[in-house]
Image (cartoon, rainbow, N blue to C red; front, side, top):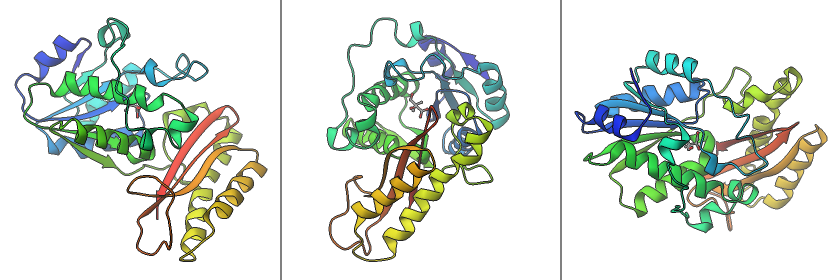
Length: 282
Ligand code: PAF
């Protein structure tokens, strides 16, 4: 595996290829990232991953400085997974001057849920993803980029960006990888104490229970069920931001009878100082 840090080095490494299979990451890789690399690789002619902790998507009070940076271990895992080129730019390589041109995604999708609780998050994500796409795919006839469904809204925001800018990139959404107890794998799980780690699976259990309650009737009182689910988590010591049933198509609240409507239950809650998210298609 070749490790490159600058955009010209990356472009030179990719010059012989026509269809990169790309997995952008912020590093501290877990089995979810590795599954994406393995799933995407056969769909392209070169497997590329990036590791870049993107300051633009962190609010000032969030964990940009403490976000785990584990480049050597990550590089070993990527190489073992069959990655051919790792792009690991420093900030000065990706943002040599302040990134004042930014992508503002459609607010109907990006100002709700995660975007409501993390204002500006999807501007930061869309901007870096478009820039990484430009680094990896410029001059390529086509390409594939893989994202994990744990960040459900992120996948939708990226898909819509690709569609609206007519980028010749196929977006692959990989299933959420889970620990044995059902906890969705996330780099932020590493922040949890042993007691918090044991409790953490309760978020996915609450999401599943809310999904079952929602599907138990064709016309459920969703706001009441959502409020009950949040109260139940709060009683266990969590600080829930949202637990909600949404339409898969646009992440808006379903209107009318649910029969036949593809839905997803999404949740975000803080356990101690760690904010976790998860979701389940129902
Ligand atoms: O999901 C992530 O790890 C990040 O949001 C991404 C897509 C790599 C952009 O920084």
